[in-house]
Every structure is written in C-alpha cells, then in structure tokens.
Image (cartoon, rainbow, N blue to C red; front, side, top):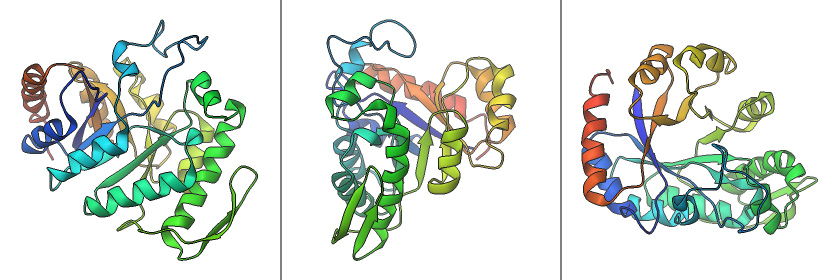
Length: 271
C-alpha cells in the first residue's frame, strides 16, 4: 500500500520544498498539489462542500512551480498535480511544463487531471464549461502526441494544430491520474489515462460500491481524511493502489507534528 499527501500549498503555509523533504524523510511516496488560477469574487458557483470557498483555496501556488521546488530537494518522492484543470489550460504550455518537470525530476511526475468544477473560473479563461469534457479528451490525446512525436500534430473539434516541434520530451510519458466520477471519466481513463483518482467517500460502507465502478482500472484515492482509520482500513482492504491523505493548511511546526502522527498511522499497513 502506497501513501501520499495532498496539500493546498499556499503563501501562508509551509513551503513546498520543506514539505516535500519532510514527506520523503517519513516514507510517503507522493505529494499532490491542486490548481486554481483564481476564484471569481462574484460567483454563483458554490464550493463543493457547500458555502463560500475557504481562504486557503484563494491563495494556492501554481502547481508546476511548487512541484519544481519539491523536485529540487528530493530524490524519490513522486510529484503530482492533484488536479490540473486541463480544459482551461493551453495545451502547448502544459505539454512543455509537464515534460520539463518530468525530465528535471528524473521521471517522477504524475499528471493528475480533471475537467474542473468552478464554471465561472473556466469562463474567465474563455472556455465554455459545457465543452469541458470533450475538450479534456482531445487535450489528453494531443498531449501524448506532443510528448512522443518529433513532429506532432492533432486535428479535433477543440484542439487543432499542424505539425509542430516541441522539446524537451519527458523521460517517459507521465502517467495520467484522472480525477472525477462517473462513466465518462472512467471511459476517458481507459482510453487516454492510466489511473482513476476519485475523491474518498465519507462512509466506509460506500467503498465497495465506489470501487466496483473501476472494473479493473487502477485506483488511487484522493483527499482521504487522515483521522478516519475506519475509512483508511476499508480502502486498504479493497486493495487500491494509493491513498492520498489530506494535509490541513497549518504553520510549519504544526505541519511536521501532523506528519509525524500520519507516519505512525501508515506504519500500521504493509508496503
């Protein structure tokens, strides 16, 4: 069983390089950081857990910058976006950032992606939220072309370009960890992805039903509460690939104490 950590990574919390070093020292295998370019002030979109967005969501670092700092001070820790909101990203810049991070980290990048939930944020990027699923599908296909072909081209309804040069190439095509739920997400994982990364359920009794939908697709569960041992036990028993534990936004000294407690927790489970 692998254990990673998901942290929001803001300018008011622990630095990403310091957190990454602490994670590697304690035996965690991966660090995932999320993405939001901004949150519109006047928005009708509610935070998924209800109400206004938490302060920390307004202040998160760019994930590729944060993960680059993490890569510089670690040797084995896997580095993941959790998640990159691909439909509102430029495909060429994303290909370059991902390939650069993977190569400079020695092939440690995990590319967590999703369609996004904040439709007003997406509209500010000039993207119609109704097209985000179809756009994401084409972006994943186009990215793999850019990463693997010397003269890459792609022609789709949302992404369309004639042959291009784009280097560096990643050391290996970064594994695609697809967040989200539902049959369309799983179909996209089977065609263009590698691992399904659903958000943890609240009730351990719901774990079997959630994972039944995977139907053979590798699963890495995201945003698992580190204080819910019954839920962790349920996922471990189900045999998922990884559990990514949520780490609260705290000052550095309290973060390290929290990590020590999580380290004792994961020590209960075999590698």
